[in-house]
Image (cartoon, rainbow, N blue to C red):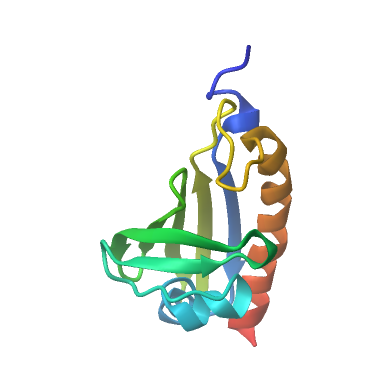
Length: 142
């Protein structure tokens, strides 16, 4: 049997450098309009404890809750009752920001709220995040 420490169930971590000041990048990871421009429609507000909905297309709506706001460096939210999404922003130059996206909460013994096993969803979502962080970079740099 595998454990949660094995790579298959480790956090999904994606890093990208965006050619924009940290405040601009923050607006794209910490506001409903910003997140909607590259990820999913939502009604998020960067207020700890604030509940919101991610409109996950064919999978329906997902209840979420903001768990940490440290503007402009860190924002976390619970996605459903199993996952934690974190954005970490570091200013690496005046017009460059490193973004680290962390998708935590994977467990080989759980299923998503949509009835799929974490093992089947994790690889797909890890690849999906690759495209999404690239889309974030494109949208912010426009």
